[in-house]
Image (spheres, rainbow, N blue to C red):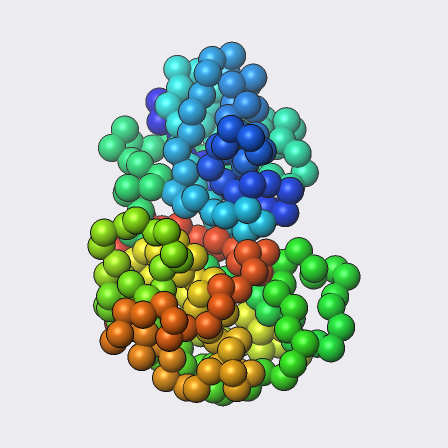
Length: 249
């Protein structure tokens, strides 16, 4: 039977999603719990390889098992075994054709910014702290250039080896609530560090350190130097991975 998991985690204590040789990753923790639960070695495949410090509310993964545990009971059983910063929100049976990574049609990410002269105590692991004022209207205008299908080569971190850098962004919005700014970006897929580069560039534009039009210039030039710095990992959360086509803008 193939089981799909929907997973929530605080990435602060982990070296990212993907299992690593010399550091603890979220994948390893869940695999060890599943192996203990089913009494057979279990390997899971995740939809997104989130980096160290990045969080998730809607990461998905799948695994195959011969266990007779009812599919919906995996969430209950695993949550008694996992540390408090990892939770299974849902477990369900899926077709053998389903693959958490290759079957998905898109993802939605959130990036949180805390704009204040002083850093917060409670949001230190979930928000990027910015001490200087940010012009929200400038930042919102900047986002419009992202919408649609473009070659986002300039938005990939150095060292990225992906060949196809064309992606479709369905929506991008910025909302302010007091000292908090919430960036939501949804698209068919994202390059390595792409959302963090978008967030870092928005901060630079909002602070007046980059002229408006940075996204449009970078899409046209393909030059990473036309964009701002990569924003810190801990402000980023994978909100949702979805498996049905959404309408392109």
